[in-house]
Length: 442
Image (cartoon, one colour):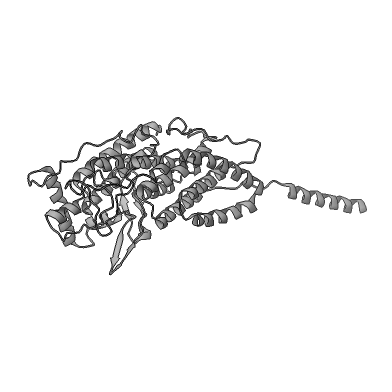
């Protein structure tokens, strides 16, 4: 009996020791955590009021960091080194360490994002909440994955520092030519300076140069009633008049407001002026990327791939578009109509603070729609709920191209772009998108 009791005790002790020495399970990283990180970046961008071009830069670098980490062991997606301009190989993962690459990718995404925003503490709230859970779940794996993520983060930060962004912060403001009636002038109500006049000096990601997809020239400025420019000017005026008569619930007004995406909207109340915060055009298409990834039940690799390649096209679209904006430096419809047709006329949307040609929404939407179509397929029906936080209803689209066409046309309904800026801008964006898709082997 004594021997039996001793055997039972020995068995129990060995079982306890075995359970204590059992390795902790690997930390699971879901696609939803990447969506959560992207959503947090979007929320902070709105709070910090980044311009549309700068917002595109904030999205693309964190995605590159996450993508490059995952590409090391991916059988489906290859590194962007040799494809993205001047990008060099990230540090290799040490196979002797217990590194979870999906975890490292998510940590790198959050950390690079934090370095590009103003309100760092808002990102830290998300980081801390996740870090506490991961540390409790598997401290060894978390520590190793975090250490590796920071090695990659430092590498990407070094790469970021050479894109000329810091240099453009010290360059001169845009000079308005008040003597030339064809040139852009600041618009009401805040009469802001032209934003990011030197954005064409930012290093492109996939393009050979900012001028690579320069659009055809816009119609020459003319107040001759038989001219193409005057025809387009009156189209803006007449469309807005019809839209106003139909009321706020009309389809054109709903379309204009759904795609407004202007982070610089100013509201005047008596002697006070304040901003209403919205997402940027690029952020709207990042939101559509999230919708498509969720609809297709994309895994972590596929989700990061979609975010990365769409954000690359969007970032280059802004560089391409802004290059044309400050080259053509065309006056906005609001200014011409107020000066020569109707001094009391106001567009449905507030005119954003930069030159007219070409339309940023059109270029960005064209580029994003091509890349998303290559990733998820044509005739991809989706319901766009991106604008719900801003009090706007869901809109449905038969395809990404369908959405890009509506986004471009929204600028005419909104009264802030001529037809040429919309049509040629959409063509400019799609040409860029096809180039990006080919270069990325989509």
